Image 1: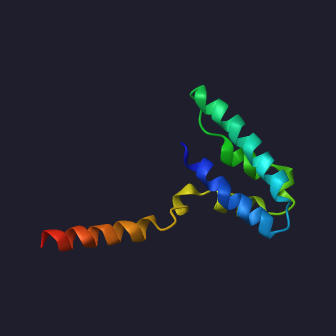
Image 2 (image 1 turned 30 degrees about the horizontal axis):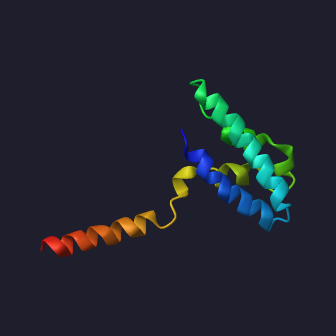
Length: 96
């Protein structure tokens, strides 16, 4: 439900790499995020991914397919898996 919000950072970085103006794209992502948040507050599903994918301004720099890929919050885990494995190894070592 909340994952798409974290994925906006990846979208912003990709837009900038393609030559988009950082301030303009940030403001547009912020506007979409605030709108999606208001909709979530009413109990409806999060529309953020579809809003971003359908936005013509973003499509000037990234295809809808690229935007969908970037908005997949499941792949936006950073070093979480590596950190979890390291923690598990430390715990195993401590109890052995």
